[in-house]
Image (cartoon, rainbow, N blue to C red; front, side, top):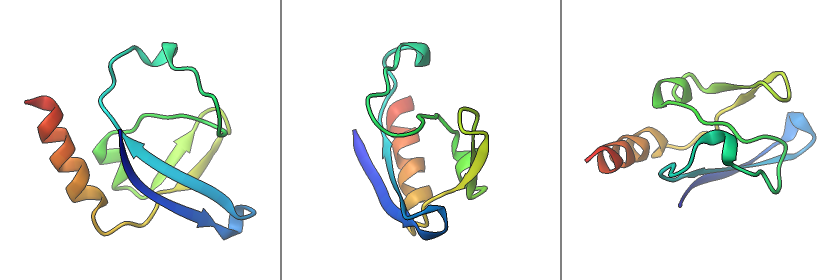
Length: 82
């Protein structure tokens, strides 16, 4: 698992957002969320829109600003598809 970033969203009551990246080795329905409000999978194309939608919470959330996010995701995508 790779930690991608951390941010506090002040306009959402100081909501802490942690982002991680890892290869998915089981089907998404088998993932058991142990903490946090929601767990979602997004494509790089969705991530670069800078706003991601949570179906569970029914709202959009900002993507954590990170200068290396897209480059890192591309490298990980290349690594995991080889």
